[in-house]
Amino acid sequence: MRPPARAYCSRSAGGAAGALATLCVLLLAERSPAANLVVNVHTLEGRALPGAVVTVRSLDGPGRQATPVHAVMDQVNRSFAPDLLVIPVGSTVEFPNSDSVSHQIYSFSPAKRFQLPLYRGKPYPPVHFEQPGVVTLGCNIHDAMLAYLLVTDAPWYGRTNDEGSWSAEVPRGRYRVALWHPRLRENSEDLERELTVGDSDRADLTLRLSKPLQPAPLSDRPHSWDY
Amino acid sequence: MRLRRRVHRPALLLVLLAASGAGRATDWELSLDTRLVSSDAYPSFMQGGFGTVRFGSGDSGLRLGRARFALSQPLGELWSAHLDASVFDDQGGSAVGLTEAYLLFRPYPFAGYRFRLKAGGFYPPVSLENRAAGWESPYTLSYSAINSWLATEVRTIGLEGTVDWLGSRSGHAFDLGVTGGVFGWNDRAGVVLANNGFVLTDRQTPLFGRVGQPGVPPLNGAEPFMEIDHRAGAYVGLEARYLDRAVLRVLRYDNRADPTDLDSVSHVLPWDTRFTSAGLRLEADHGWTAIVQWLEGVTTIAPQSLTLNWPFQSAFALLSKRFGRSALSARYDRFAVQNNVAEGYGQQDGHAWTAAYIFDADAHWRFTLEAVRVVSSSVSREEAGGPPLATETQWQLAIRYALGSTIR
Image (tube, rainbow over all chains, first blue to last red):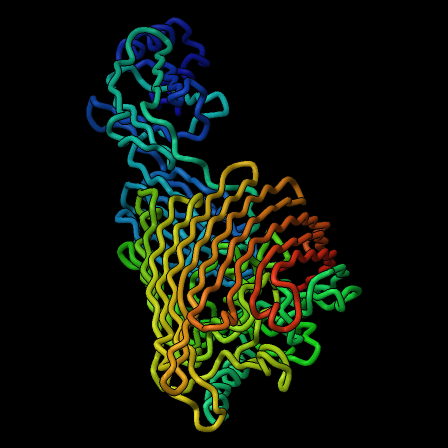
């Protein structure tokens, strides 16, 4: 998450020319020093919302790009594990099957349409995700299975922790912060905020939902029952 | 008989296909359900009696609830074959047989819609209660009056197509579905209901099986799954879902039997049976489930110049709570059958309370304790020498052991 300029300065400061290094730090600090952007997400009732996806894009023009990753979404006990992944555009996701039953996963979301039969004990090539957007996954055999992939082109992204908080170090500048959660009732656009990360070392943004979340999927129902 | 052999052939083909299907994983299940029964009920419909529960007082003691073997075999990526074979403790009825046997075509959803096709013998989509493997209820041993009737003499032997709009997979909270079925071999659906009224049982008549015993009136080993008039029956249903929390299901069924068309070989009449059903199942956090179902219809026969009909209605409400490995459920049933016959044969009016406690020791062992208490008036029972109004109580302790490829 650290910007390259800061890393470079940090290495220079370790050298012999201490005065020059200090000057370097000061000069770079004038241009794009890092600040800690902290986003807190609260439900309508004011409770912390864990697991919400936060994406941050710069409004000062193109800059940092997130590096594609290789992620894994397993099938365990007739459920996707995990049931939500956030990945940058260009990433790949592997879908192994740890269950003793077969699965047939699919998505007809505009961001990625695909179908993949997962017979037990067979490896399958990973799936590439080239378009940003929400990809909703289901299983053609087990209707109760549901998972999401959020494919993002945002340079900074992540999910809120148990305290409903997410943070990243970003260069000073202007940003658009967006929020997504599979159980949101409001439009994601209504929860977008713009903010300027200025002179302070830390910028805080608190987002509060304007509508209650949809109920969470039932977790304790036997998987063998009809959905 | 020729018709039955003709239908048995595809079922045999299914078995062979399932047995020969190498490569793709075959799923199987085997279970044995034994019962310790204490009952003060009148003899059941399987024994020629007018009891309203599965086991009469003469059946008290150790009984076989059900021995079951089920097989699911993928046939390529989009087709699969499903067989469910059972043995019930029937004292002479058709004890062994397939309760369901069908091919399922399940293409991947496309653009938010999904199509499914079933071909073979299976239950029409009415019950919201019988959602566990083998069309069993995960809440009680005895099914509701509505679903007991379906188990006894209603089955689709034909084709069923379903189109679902999968809103929950495209950013919405709802799914919607429409189902249509075309079937034969259910021309005698209604014969048990008109004779015996509603009962609360978990005995499922096998496909092309008998109800009661040959030579023992009133049913004389009735065969609900016969094709007599060569007219296909049909049903159409709607289903709406809210997330995984609520299911609303409505169905209109008509076996389109010609009640005047006496079969020249078996000398039995088709029973023209039609009904409408609706049900709602709600599930909430902490293991709570509530189900309400309603069914209303009429069954008709027209021997010679007479037209005899039996309108019927039933409804139930069920509340269940799971806590850990246990589940506690209670259900209240109402049911009634009227008719236009002068002596009132077949008229029935009653209600029932069912309470059950289920304990799953592990994935293999299940223990269930259930009590059913039925209060009913019945003209048929009275004509057979019984009381017009009766209260019957049946206790069952069930021990079930299951194993299979998916049971861990």
